Each structure stands twice: as C-alpha cells, then as structure tokens.
Image 1 (spheres, one colour):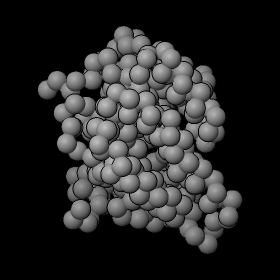
Image 2: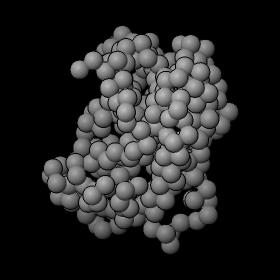
Image 3: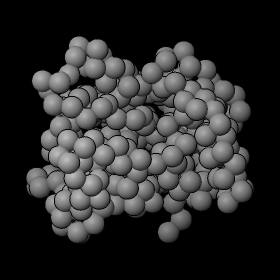
Length: 263
C-alpha cells in the first residue's frame, strides 16, 4: 500500500529513543522528511545519523526542551524555513514518575502538566496555522492506554494524559474543516526504557526482579506478550498517511488488547 508520505514533512518530538525514535524511523522509511528533537543534543544527532544512513532522507535534528514554549516555537519555525512546510506533527514527551496519589506533591502535578499537556499545546499552537494554509495536516499525540483504562500507581499520567486527549478531541472538531486530522495513539505495555523504569520501581517496592513484573504485565495482555516499538510506530505512520483520510478525533489503543473496555 502506498501511504502517500513521500516528501511530506514530519515533526516527531522526543524521538532520540523508544516510541518516538521508532515513529521517526517509520516515517523516514516511507520517504517523509524529518524534524526530530529531544533534550540531549548528542542523542538526537546520533539518531538522525542512523536514520539518514538507513533511509537517505533529509533530517533536521535539534536539542529541544518541549516544556519550553520558546524552544518549541523556534524548532517549528526552523522546520518551516528548512523544508517550506509542516504536514505532520507527532507530539511526545516522557511520562511523569510512577506514584500513588498520596505520594504526589503540588510540584509533581505542575511538572506533569508541563511535561505532557503544555508541551502538546506548544506544538499545536505553532503547527496549526501552517497546516491551515495548505488545507492538509496530521496531528498525532503519543499518549497512553491509561486514557482508556487507568493504570495502578500512575495517577499523574492517568490524569494529565486524559487532559491531552480532551484537547485533541476538541481540536479534531474545530479543525476538521481545514482537513487537519487529529488523533491520539495510545501505547500499552511496550518494550522501552520507560517500561524498564516503571518495572524497576515496582520490582524494588515488592522485592522481586523487574523481569517478574514485566512477565506479570504480559499475562494481562490477550496476545500474551509485551509490544515492540515498531508495532506501535506502524499504526502512527498509517494515521499520518493519505490512507487515513477519514479518521480523526479518535484515541486508538495499540496495546495487544490490554484495555478491557468495549471502546
């Protein structure tokens, strides 16, 4: 299937590793030009070089703190100047720390809002006018299956990511007339450094090995295993494509069936 992504311009945030890197590589394999960022300059430049070697696509790589509005503005502006357009924006950021409500502080909540909600807001404020002018756009947030089914010990993520989903649903209604499609991609338990962090914290609390925690999670998934970043990225690449032209305002769980709800 020709996804129609060749020479499209895609921004992928927090893409030096994990899900973001897998998405960026997936876009590049379809011929999209890339603007990628992460906090650590050395890591994002290394990722850019890996993608260039494998795919030959043009990659702009910058160190960006996505919780800083001005840094996001400059990054989007440089992408527009470099490539002449922005067609696709995949927002992404690390997750808040694993905690129960009683362990959280006001500062934790403020940091969580800045990390996940405000970072998404900063990107969409910058890219929406660019997409409106061309009457074509895709905005995809990497959130979590927790927006469909809250996950134990992740009260910060459960709450803040749900706010992101509310924002995206609203944007899908407001900007559909401009042919800008807005969706949420909701990973389940996927083998990334974030999963290692969460399993390590739980393992320490319970006095067991992290592998035991991950095996427990896998048993909760109907497919009987944890996901691979590439499996998640394949869905995001489709959502960004021409073939997803009548799909907007939805939150899609890419979780091996972990979420037990009907929708």
